[in-house]
Length: 125
Image (cartoon, rainbow, N blue to C red; front, side, top):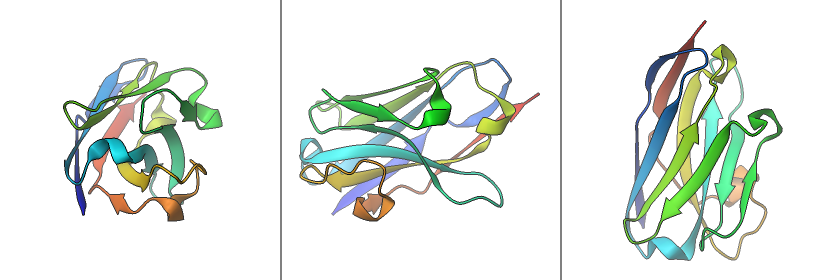
């Protein structure tokens, strides 16, 4: 069992930045690939970013367009999402999720076994 807790969400103006954190407890953090997803009101949950268990490989949703950076610190059992140049359309609840490291389909939500409770990000115009 892995317990995930996101933090760092809040209200920011367009063009601003936020850094989300996801702290993990439980089984060996480095055994898991980690993903970030988001869900806007009235929309389906969408893939944002992924980082593999070692931190060597990262993937992003098309809409990111170079504005976000995902990273992890396996010594601190934490994954981060640095979000820059935020837009109003980035407003959503952001979730982190963990998938066993042998799962390589990074944008398939069903392969993520554990999910956090989410943190709200609101970007004002």
